[in-house]
Length: 418
Image (cartoon, rainbow, N blue to C red; front, side):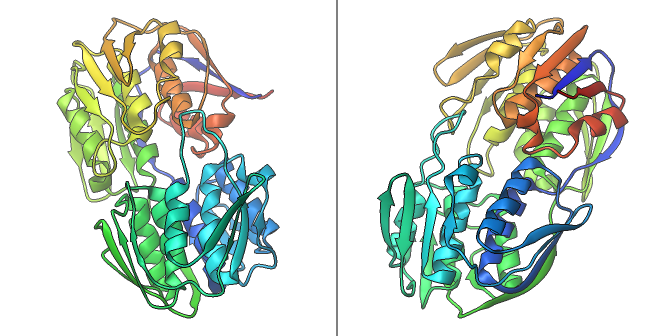
């Protein structure tokens, strides 16, 4: 397995452009199953999760390939197969989003349950509840979800709790259902909004974008589309924290700062200087990092996908900080690794109490999931001495050549091939 070798202690300086949103692209790829005509996506990051989704679409008989470096073309049409196999779905939970489109397009679908997750349970019960409300007959057989419906019919779908992938899955199915659907308590994350914009461009009739209540009037067919993917708000936040933790000054471009408001507020509250433009944020360290309180929450709250990275920064704060994780029960797995680097962190259930230390020390550490790996890279960039981050295949799932971007900013990081 590859690892990162990092020599810390150098402030990052310069400007870097965020890659396209990996989470948006996954949903957009699933939506291509609904279309007649090619779907062309630009500003697409070259990350492992998207390679997995390309394989899944290929297994369904929907060819997808890289047309150019960051342009993905999907030759959309009715799938020739309706089964998404375990060997592919088990590697990435977002792949379960093909269930709704397959069912709506083909009248049946057989998709493996995605199984467990290192950071906690991510049940799919809300996905299935929504599809059953649309008229699907759903059975669980030997680890697979088997769903059938001659024609989905519009319905009221009240989610018990907001779920991003569940909202996207059911929304896509409703686009080809007969009649009107109303999705209540829908997730309002930016990635849901981007999916709605693309579905609308395909010919879907959806009202309520940006709210937790979506009204959908089903149509008989959708057409192909070309779309430039929005910048990845989590990658942008990670890069900004890299500038802060190394006491540097960096600019991240190609993003919508409003999507990062909760993160930017906490960075400003911790004493970092920010300049915010229409599509960019400049961060500057101005002498100290203050403590803060953070509680993760669905958008527009503080994103759970930025919790590990901000914790790395707070290990060097002048005052105590408190981080409460409300989304995933096991999302403190990076704490033990930060402690190996000298961090002072105490856990009490879902709350972490962080007392800043003078410096972190380089050490061998092991990544356990995508965002934990980013956290450890950030800590290594700030630490005295050498840090080796093992299992960087986790970070390759969601960050497009992160080590190259960090090197361009002055970071001393290199990939050691296995």
